[in-house]
Image (cartoon, rainbow, N blue to C red; front, side, top):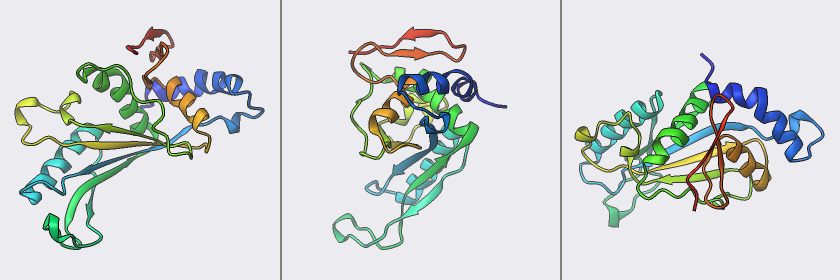
Length: 198
C-alpha cells in the first residue's frame, strides 16, 4: 500500500515545488531519497541489554529491523574495546520512509514538551538534514511502562539535491514543522493546517 504522503508528493507537491523553485525540468525537483536513523548506547551500563532494547524499540518505531553498529577503535576511558557493539542503525527507503516521516511530523514531534518547531538551519551544506530526538517515548508505538532506559536518536533526511534551500523547501512541503514564520503543514488529503511555530 502506497502511503498518502508519497502519493501527495507525486501528484501535487512535486509540481508546486518545480514552480516555486523555478526549475525547468521535473527531474530537477528535489526528492527524499532515504532516512537514516542512528541510535547509540555506547556509554550505558549493561551494554548488551541496552543494544537488545534499542533493536526492539527501533524495530517497533520503524517497522524494520536495524543493523548493530560496532566501535572502530578502543577507548580506554569509556571501557570500550574495538569491535564492540555500541548502537544500532537503520536506513528507510520507499513507502516505509514516507510512512515513518508522516508519523514523525504528525504524531511524534507534536508530543515533544513545549514544541515550537525544529531548527531550520541543521543542514550539512549538501542538502541533507539531521534532527536529534532525545527520547523515544514521543513515538506512540512505545509503551511508556515498558521503557527501561532513555534512548536518543539522530534522524538524517538524505535528499537528491546539494542545495540546502531547495532541501528545506522540500521538507517543509512534506510537513516538517520548521521554527520560524508560520509553517503550513499539509495534511494527507491536501488541505492545510497551521503548525505550531514560534
